[in-house]
Amino acid sequence: MEPTRFSVLVRNPVVALALASAAVFWPLTPSQAQPSEASQALAQWLTSDCEDGDLKALTRWREAAVSDLIAALNKGPAFEGRERVRQLAEESYDELVEQAARKPEWQLASNREEYVNRDVDNFDAQFRVRAAQALIAINTPEARKALESFLSQIQRDGAQAREDVRMTILALLNSKPQ
Amino acid sequence: MSLKRLSRALLAVGVAGSAPPVAADKLKIEGITGGDQAIVMINARTAAGCEVQVSRSAGMSEVGNLLAGCKPWIAVLAANKAVLFKAPANQWTDGADDEDSVTLKPIIDVPVRVWIANPKAAKKARDDMARANLTYEQNKVGIQFVPKYEDVPADSVGVIDDAIVVATDGTFKCRKLPELQRSAFYVAKTLNIYYIKEAITGQNCAITQPEGDGNITFIGGGANRATLAHELGHAFGLRPMDAGGHTDGLPGFGSTNVMVGNGTAARKRFTAGQVFRMNTHADQWGGTMLIENGLRPGPGRKCPPDSPPPSPSNEQCPPLDADP
Image 1 (cartoon, rainbow over the protein chains, first blue to last red):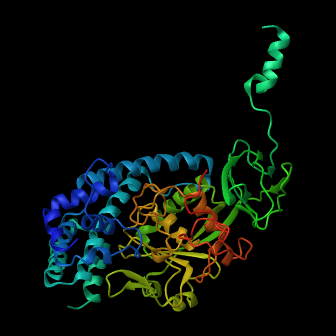
Image 2: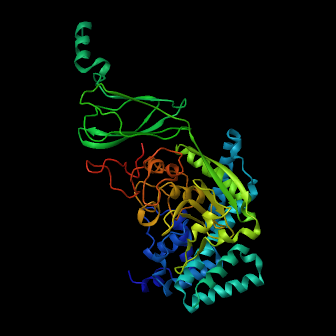
Image 3: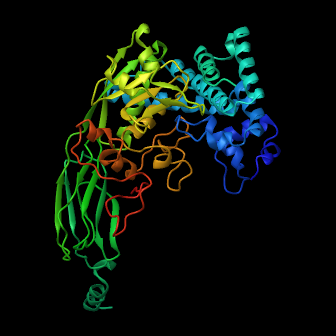
């Protein structure tokens, strides 16, 4: 598949993000349309757990992927994805509380609200930083401009992203001059 | 039908319809916790050739008629016990009345030094460790983490931050590990986990070139609650990338497998094939840290995650997706 088809398949960033979330949280049944190779690469990278994730599989789409990555950076994960993370975190907390009754050394340090909110916040942070990493790897003028404007926006409205996200994106920008 | 004729008919098909008892070799496992169904992997020759059988056992089990030949080995995964790996196991004979016996040992305590270089992550570190312990217990990995938490003074985090930096390809990579290993924030032959300020997910440094160290793992602000268990899977030999330790999209592994690389926080399953490797693996990066750190006896055996399925020419490794 040529990179030019990427924009056709996932031209709408909202569709791309929904697809990304769907691929991760609601695996498609065989009867449904499978995500394209490109959008799978996007979904995989945005939610990849290791730094060893395959960034190259995404960045080979280069300019065609930039607009979707900028949307991911600015908007974060889709609402449905965040809610799914919240639900799973609640289930995990309850399971761990139950286990801690059996093994006191496994006592949780956080209360339920802290535990759940942290998982959702970290998911958001991961999503945006992954988008930033891909943008810096592509390193086109448009990609850098998006990162710089995201950082400026944070300075104006600190609530949009956490300090560690800002710091990490700054480190990414500084690591690779254009 | 007379009673005599009925008796003869029953005898002809086996009493009450059941087949006559077939002689079978037996494996006796001592030390299984009450109620547990241990996972048993046996490599032996059968009529079909050398193969790994995977089954469950509560203590004594019949394993069919195992034959002489192959290089027999036995692995047992049981709740709250160390993984037993007997290689070579006793040689089976062609007769069907062989019996082998193994005894399980206590679960292995794995010391972990958790370095809190990001004060905001202090609670997360403890919660992650509880989650990892539960995941490893549920999958009968045979170990339990015994963490010791240490705060890193703000003026000393530099040596830790320097060891995980952005590479030119946009990913964060381990580097300058010797400096970190020589610092006050590293304990040799111990899992060292660093909670850092960068909003990355996680990174185990085993396959870093040239100075990899599976005992070093970084956890960042983008990590989910399964990230620690995942990175420790890398530390125990399920190496990422070309080594095949990530199970994304592989048949036999669902989305809840801990080693799915693009996985969600809901990951909590290891296959028996993965657990086998976590306890026995040998490779050029030091193999599983359980052997490297002296917690399990060596030598390990080379069973990379993507090793081919067992065959007469490769009968030392169970398939990665082996499960009862």
